[in-house]
Amino acid sequence: MRALLAGCGARHGRPVIFFLLQVLRAAAALMVVWHHARHEAGLLAERGFGQAPAPETLVPWWGGVDLFFVISGFVIVHTGVRLAGRPGGRARFLAHRIARVVPLYWLVSLVFLALALARPDLLGDAAALLGDPAALVASFLFWPLARPDGTVQPLYGLGWTLNYEAFFYAVFAAGLGFGRRGAVAWLCGGLMLLVAVGALVPGLPVPLRFWTDPIVLEFVAGAGLALAYREGFRPGLPLRVGLTVLGGVGLVLAARVLAGQGGADGFLRPLLVGGPAALLVAAALGPTRDAAQVARLPVPVRGLVGLGDASYALYLVHPFALRLVREGLLRLGLAPAVQPWGSMVLMLAGSVAAALVVHRLVEAPLTRILRARLDPRGLQNRVRAALAPVPPGGRAD
Image 1 (cartoon, rainbow, N blue to C red):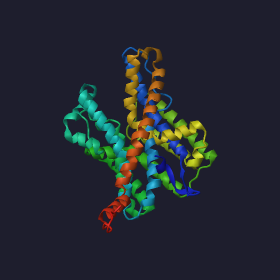
Image 2 (tube, helix red, strand yellow):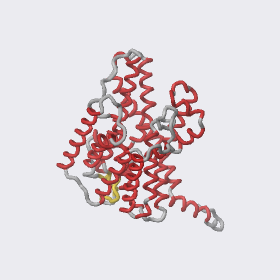
Image 3 (cartoon, rainbow, N blue to C red):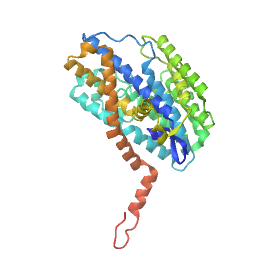
Image 4 (cartoon, rainbow, N blue to C red):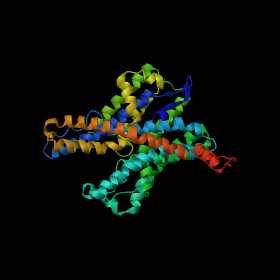
């Protein structure tokens, strides 16, 4: 993911890296993992092993998703807008997005499907999707469908965020023919119009109701920051510190306002959580480094930058790791001794370890291979090579 966070320019011929955004990506993923680890610790408590963690009052840990959405809005617009108005720009943008998002998500979804077929009794309401081929196909194609209980989630529940991401990519790609500023105006105007339609028109079909949720305004916030950055916005250290403090305080206040609710609906979510997330992303838009300079950063910072690279893997694989650690604690008889905070720390550590392995051995190679296969320029070169006449006495390379 580091390449996506590289600036459009270069320092001494080397791509620059928004290393603070990488740190923020790691923080967002860790927030989501911690939120779900709290849930797993609560399940252990329900089975008589220790106490459940106290309600979330520090920050809304589930707000890591909102932080992801704002970062995504910035990254996609900042890196993708250079394709605006170029021949084949839409195809290249979508090819890179497919290569980045699809392989690991499909692989994880297939693993989940295999487990679901083996033990459907563990799925709860999601088990109803197993007998609905259309719902299974929709789960893999990022198309929002409602479960029997009314929640709009694919088979692998975490995919609801990717349904929003895929829609965001499609809307942005559609505007790439309008030039750089036109593409951003199309994106922001289109998403805001959709939110207005969702607020004013009742009874929309499920996909439209899903895509018109005010949470998509967090992509708009990120896109606005990308446009501001391209126009010269470079916050200095005092402003970055101030934005960080305001963003942190905002998340703390959001946790207090939403205490015990486990989430926020409608405009409350982008207002109470998306707003502070946007302040934190703005604070991360200061310094950039090239790869050699990142290698000289303090070890903890380098570690978070590396975890930022693996944040997508961490987001997708952590439910498996959490349950594996939970069951390990139960089978080893350690749950009573470590509950609740020790179990949560172990779950977090196990999730990070699993993500780093999956990122290095699975995600990164699959992304490189599929990007090379799907990139229109590479595809054109392969077609030309295949159609080229074979030289006398030899073969075409």
